[in-house]
Length: 161
Image 1: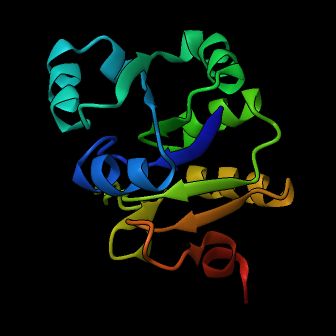
Image 2 (image 1 turned 135 degrees about the vertical axis):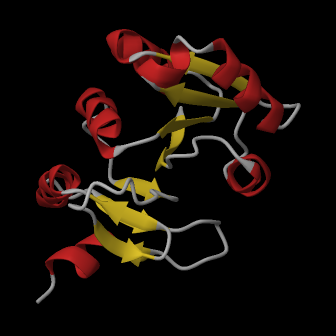
């Protein structure tokens, strides 16, 4: 079953590998990314960051539905990671029962349109539209680097007056 959905532009790194996999007893990490699925160097680099007891799979958006449904029906604990809100929105379309998404880091891409939420999270107007849709559908979005931190709730930061 899918135990955690995470948006983090670094995808897999030490914090994810050490703390999140342990907290959720993750057996498998599913990285959803068209860019990475076709990039052997990126896949090799990401494999270096994974714990030895955790399987790592890569899937492009064209096959995300079948992979997610397989993961959801599996007895394995699966964490799904995307590097952006647009890709995670595709994931959530397949998993409408989603009630929580964790956001790690989303660095400033220097586009000039970015809104800084925390020192490590920047969002674009397109991201805000997706976040608003999720909020209206009852999906909580918690910004948290590691499990021991307290969530900063995206709706409170973006939408409270």
